Image 1 (cartoon, rainbow, N blue to C red):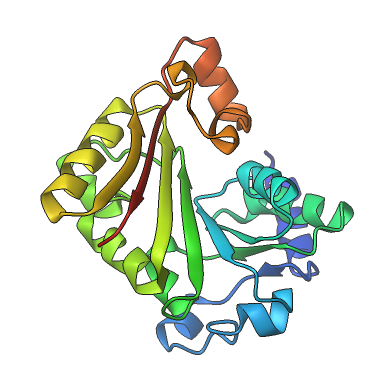
Image 2: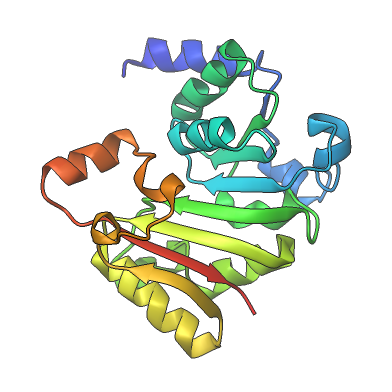
Length: 224
């Protein structure tokens, strides 16, 4: 994408009522006005809040919001040119149960109050295979602790990835930490009991992975 198109999208992002772009400074100072107020201020209901972390263009966020109109969905990504697509589509299709935040996922606790979130989806995150990149791995112990701090007591986390490494790493970590694994499969499209939202919703890249014959893994777990 050319720099002109990116700039155009960044400017348009500023006009979207469903897209929040708090600065790092605001987040670190714990001054983001939506923290703890998502139900009352934005969604204006008490329905469960579901996050998609690293949402890209928001494909999963949008598909889930259509499938579950009785839940609220928030897609989070740092890439403004990508998140533009999801935010724009949600406005065009008048999805009142969708919002987006442009921010770094490591600051997730600065955007949500304890117990404010019911579910988290991690859809095809970068596996960060090299050891020195482990701190950026979205299922490492530090990130799991952040998720636990914003989830309800029975909150769920879903990991869908084409990376067997990330799938295996996460299972081993969860078992070692005593967390509750509810469903784990190394090739979800070969699991006849797979949840509909896992196999019936496919991102652009997921379709490419499937065409290449790659197995898609899935993990559903609860932090204890």
